[in-house]
Length: 337
Ligand SMILES: [Zn+2]
Image (tube, rainbow, N blue to C red; front, side, top):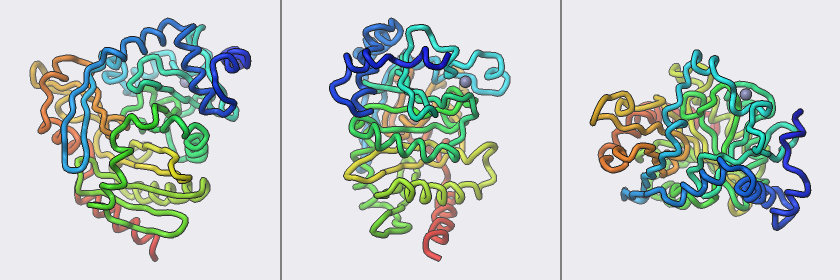
């Protein structure tokens, strides 16, 4: 029964400091660390992860050696592999100790037991429906504000790092953990292309960068959805996608505004992933990697990866300059004509 996976009101009251959703989510993590071994171990191991840092012009990229992420990074996401496994995001398959907070009876907020962030959550839809963002924009941006005090929300497309492409889900993590959040506004100011700006909202692009991206700022939930939909419809003009345009999205609420970074993609994984022996680098880029925290689950990759490798990996999975210019001009038309 669905209700049996909900954390009890008593547990929420015991572990949360406040009555808002963000505090309840924080409380959920405390509860799960205390009552669920897998989560307790996952967060204990996170304390010993190692990090390297690479400096670029106006931003940094960190590399995190995190062996706990091997399952996710090497996940087989082809149709056959997916069909042959039990869905780990369906509530009826959750481990007995895993509890969640329902969000409008649409989503379940769950602790991610294999964390990258000091606090890391997976937020599946309660129904088993495919990973596609367009029908879930309102939910994503509403959640962004509701837990925005402590967390950022992010989305990985079905072929862009989602390890369950058959079950719609977002993730959330510690608010100021990804470097891009504190860099993006300066980057846009220095090198960005403003596509549209009004009192209500702003949309900009950044093409001269390791990761090409589009950036939305808006004061209003409905408007955020509308602007995102326009951007989405422009990305749909590309012939290179199957279910939806390839993308990773990071969304947060700051200064009473929604701020959304969308990274359009051309590929799921770079050549490095498929090489053999010492040439292989097992790095499967998703939203967190695009946000400036590259995850290497194998120590050998963490030790050997260079700045040039990072540039090459992002070059291969991001859109090309030509695509960036094409999207930008189409977007300009949508907003200014
Ligand atoms: Zn499922």
